[in-house]
Image 1 (spheres, helix red, strand yellow):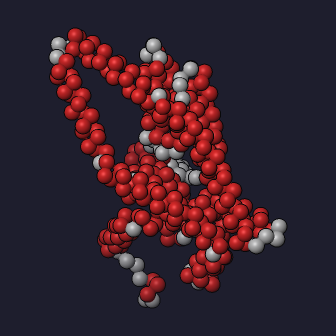
Image 2 (cartoon, one colour; image 1 turned 120 degrees about the vertical axis):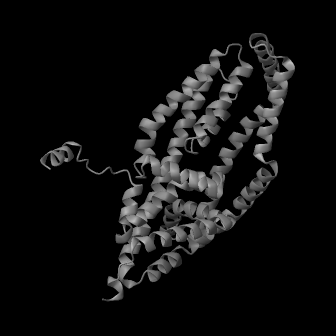
Image 3 (cartoon, helix red, strand yellow; image 1 turned 90 degrees about the horizontal axis):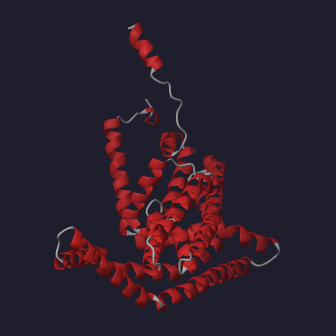
Length: 365
């Protein structure tokens, strides 16, 4: 019997796979400050690659083409940043008034609660203070500052990484071809092209989704007369990119603004209705047609991947959990021994035989 015919028992293979995954995730967690910027930069480089190729085809030097592409990207991001900053500055100027109004409403709630539930104002105030302190303590300010510092480092490193990845892209692709040998050269090229297409389609779909959701939120809030509608709409659209949790946070902010600035609590309920309707449209029409069609992952896989990558890398991990899992599925689908794992991650349900054939078999016995 040759070495290729030796089959490893599942009792040995399973612990080996488990230890391998444990070692992989441990390394990813420890090296997150190195790995995360590289992943983000690679994704951005894949999206910008067609633009660089366009400039190269019109006889521009590759380095000049990359610099022009990065400059255009910077201008687009800066323009969006100026819009958000101008809206956020208005919100910041009015923040003291909002805090005073919110405090007034909170005092009214305390008086109403103490009168209806036979509680003293002191007990309620003490409970609110304790809850506030617990929430603030759970935020871990030091960790938040450290995370903010890592985000700043990420923003400075990423343009350099993107430039290098775009410039050395032919070398990197040739490296993977040589690693997997001449026999798999065509398959490696196919997988690389599929990954590039997947990332480009997925991120372009996300940008379209953000634009549509931001428009729906902003227009709806403007119709309801909610202050800071544009900044809340844009922020809500970006929070919507964080699966499952982002939409809840996005809805809470305008609801609080509505409670503080409007005379009737019905406005907060109308805001909630607006966000529920928008989420329904997003989940049933926008995401399946524009984004979901690019990524064939089932809901269970999506939830688990978001939780796992959030535990590994925080909010940054949540943002890239879906595309990374989709890339893993794509790779699994092209490796014979890993195809069952690709099937597990996918959204293709096997044909159900139902209970009738099983019952007939039992009756015949």
